[in-house]
Image (cartoon, rainbow, N blue to C red):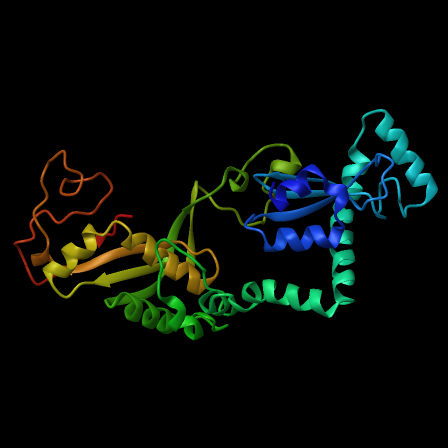
Length: 318
């Protein structure tokens, strides 16, 4: 029988430190959790049971804790705990076990500090986990960058630009143009139309609570105009091939939006367009192929052959 099998079948033969050392050096990988043996079976051993599951390894102990037969709780709380256990109510026990786990961790650490060999053994086991923290994750955490993003990669070199407290359009343009290697223009829309929520609509009634009082300003209609509340991003391809390549990339719009949100660090309505020469565009056609067909709500150039050098604004499809 292996040593792990002996621990599981005869846990009383081992001290707590021995069990911890064996599990630490074994091939079993899992988180250790500690719990109190509510009613030890007249045994003086520290370890009562060792159980392994998909969540980790659970060790039940009969040593002093906040709950259990050898409790360090006041008598009146312990009596209440026993009374609840007799009625199959484990709420108080589960609550105390939250603190028992931390108590046992500190208890084991205190025992290991008294032995230089155990301390060296613990440092040797935990050393790689403490020192091999990926440098990329550390730098991303310092710069408040996303550690992993399915749309963004390589933003680490722009951490100083993104981390600036003051935000301006010139810095955002520099970030987008350098990161995507494209000519990108950024501007703030002077006026944008927004649909008013139902709670903000003007009302006329005899009830004072819902009536717009005389002399106060009110907004008629269901829409309103806001100034300087929306960003417009214009992507200006240099050639037809570059335009077709970007338009075929289904993740480009999401990556562009995520980069703007990461820099601004607040919610702003973003409108993204291609700003291309008309000669780069193909004539619209009716087709079942969604990549080349005319779509409702999308701006299309009906006759790109006319004025081929004029610029056309096309919505970027996300």
